[in-house]
Image (cartoon, rainbow, N blue to C red; front, side, top):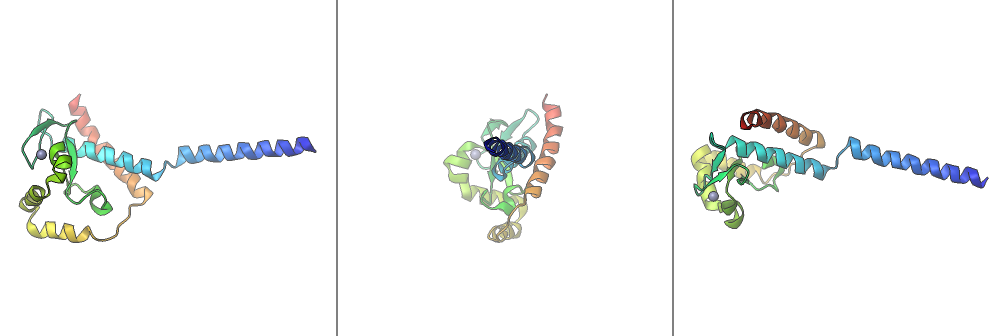
Length: 158
Ligand SMILES: [Zn+2]
């Protein structure tokens, strides 16, 4: 009798360990997906905006940085999911503008308006107030899309 009970408990424990393991391998947590998407998207933006020698000229202050030391700046901040992975909303720039100067907002607005037009920038600002969520599948698609895009640059880098 005691044997049967302990055997049953071992089975239950083994079953839960299997469930736990399956969860870990099959569905990575959302925060891990976001981290991965941020990383591949940032790499893409910095490579896209670099010159032939892989240097980025910050569009807000003109300082030059090797692409790995540059940062992916967001005009509409990363807290807005609608524009977090938008190619027109993101540009490679420097840490000074992005962090120390609090994303150099006045210069960044001028840059955006000159590049995309005032009405397009106004539209982005209006859209950024809408509530928007990204599904797990959409995040996975973003990761796949930008991993492929990066590959083309990486082939040239090496
Ligand atoms: Zn800068």
